[in-house]
Image 1 (cartoon, rainbow, N blue to C red):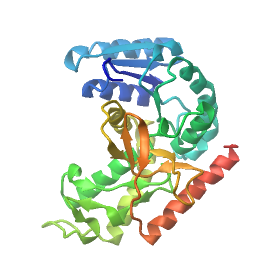
Image 2: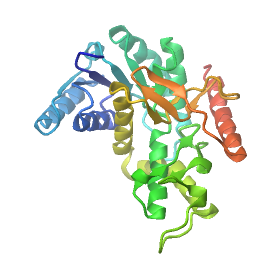
Image 3: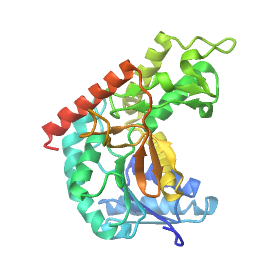
Amino acid sequence: MDGRPTKLAIIGAGAVGTAIAYSALIRGVARTVALMDVKATKVAAEVLDLSHGLEFVPRADVIGSDDFAVCADADVVVLTAGAKQKPGQSRLELAEATIGLTHTILPQVLEVAPDAIYLMVTNPVDIVTHAALKVSGLPPNRVFGSGTVLDSSRLRFLVADHCGVAVQSVHAYVVGEHGDSEIPLWSSAMIGGVPLTQWTPLPGRPPMDDAARERIRHEVVHAAYRIIEGKGATNYAIGLAATRIVEAVLDNEHRVLPVSTVATGFPGLEDVCLSLPTVVAREGAYKRLEVPLSDEERAGLLASAETLRQMQTRFGL
């Protein structure tokens, strides 16, 4: 990537794919943003709409097509194409249709972008990422999922709102499945360097007690369902989250993000894709951090892995 303009390719010009393209343009993540979708009229309209705003963002080109050739030589490919989640439907229930799409799409993209980093942003992301690793034959650092990056952002927002601080001052992670079995890591969560378990409420603010933590956990887990019920899809926040991951790759940031990939070296987790804090840089998701866990968190993480393992078995992965 050194010495030449960067290229971001996005497969799927739906609500999530276009949100990623939009946020990538605003943040100036890549010199070229390419959209690919089987609906030629739709992708052409989205490219035209985005292009009309190029005066107001860092220098970039937007291209699009219903042909995979538009992704040629991309540095990062983001796959958002998948079955749409319906109100009340779990992410895991989407698995079969989306796995089938992954088997169809990925080999065609690999032909034109063999050296890219592949980011999966379609639900159920952990199962789809595992399928993508098998289909592509690429190493885990080059194929990984958006995981619980968005869930962790939701957690930080809710903690910040409860405690009356800026969300940027909250450091906390959600790990495991991007779904109902995910685990907030309360034992390592901090606000401005103060462990959350030792947090003294600011004047007029409620305590961060067990009841507050359980309420926040419930809101994080069910946030997507609430949004889907109200507007049909989640798109803005995941667009920003995915763009942040892409930025970490293209700018070689070595940023720690809870992305989803194989947890090699972690007993009980090696055969599934799930999220743990991971260093993300130009080579992709290349180093998992050994985050200290309480006994309850460790048990929850293993249970989350078992949920995913059962789903993988069900789909022959």
